[in-house]
Length: 248
Image (cartoon, rainbow, N blue to C red; front, side, top):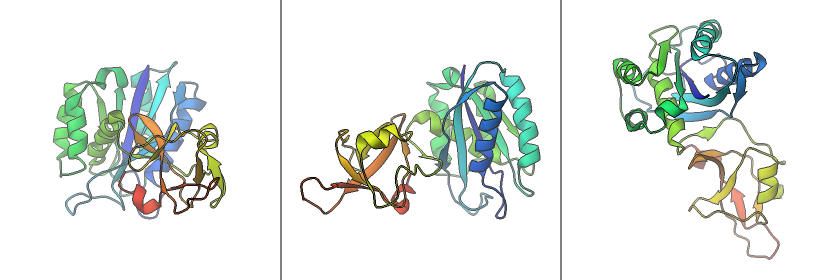
């Protein structure tokens, strides 16, 4: 059974970020022998004066293929985990959905996209979750993190939102790698230009300080843009800057 797990608003300015807690929770699932987890994606939500957040207002989501654990058991474990590990003053929310149950849920996708553009009351999140049997719960503070948690599941489900957590660290900045090398040494499934062209395996890429993948069309994609060189055998493409990738 494949599920989507998302958490939001677990930190404060001095604590570990929500991405770290998502990684710890995913690790717990594997160490307990409950299943295999996938990489974590970060989803940017609306930054607005009416929305309490720590620094960036982003939710974290990962997939898990459960073998030896029920949803109820995972919910109980995750609740204890969040209440223990979330920072003082945070408003943590947890969302867990069975992927097959929500895979064609347009209302969930619409809600997730709204959370990037407008202020949504948490009652609306609970109503939607209840309607489609999605687990949604709050674990401290005002519990407003349930909005981002539900949106995180929807945005991950869309396949076209978010950055994968962490640097890929394929090679040192300034190195040149082929597309094939990038794909075999990281989670990257495709290397594409910022205009959408898929690059062949033998194309050379100049690797910069930021080596990250984004979620596009359900795949982990490294985005690149042209270099200024026209010399044969030199890298004609380079990785995008952190500033550019903030749009994902």
